[in-house]
Amino acid sequence: MPRQSKEEIDAEIVDSASALFAQHGYRHTSLQQVADATGYSKAGLLHRFSSKEAIYDAAVRSALVRTTALAADTAGIAQGAERDRVLVDALLDASVDWPGTAAFLQSVVTSDPQGASDELSQAGAALVGAFGLDANNVSDEALVRLIIATAGLQASASAAARLGRTEAWRPHIVATAMEALGHSGAPQAAVRASARST
Image 1 (cartoon, rainbow, N blue to C red):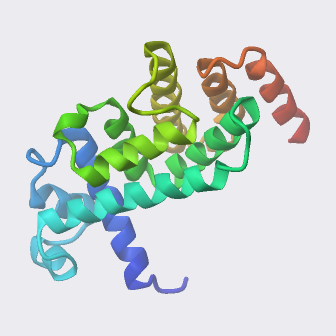
Image 2 (spheres, helix red, strand yellow; image 1 turned 90 degrees about the vertical axis):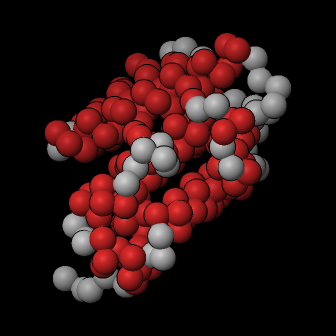
């Protein structure tokens, strides 16, 4: 097994820390908790990052980079079911590959934007914008649908990974997220298509 690069190790640390920030918030997450979650001593962690704030800043930057890339990747697709399907698939992949960052992004969408940093607010707005919604002028129904779809997707992906059922659950997660976004008929069609391809 090849050795991980410094960037890969740092990305894993940031992802683990992101999960803690999502669960407890910045103020209630200690450097010791981050060290425990990553398997490093506090000294080892501080060798890689200068402070808890530096880790948090890296988590925010990671969230912003991922959501901005997601929005850019779907910019050429017309708003609607096809675009939402691409986004749901990408978010599911991200939730499996980077569960801490996915949880952190989800907390951005559901948190009070007044308390978030500019970059964190931009990450949340980019995620909402990727679905063709204006974060500053979104209807209650559209926002609720988006929160249910993305929060349910993130929680289901986490449970599926824990249970070793990521591939088996994928069509159901995608179908349910699509239905939450308002695309009726998508669930059964997605599940049937997935069953035929396996």
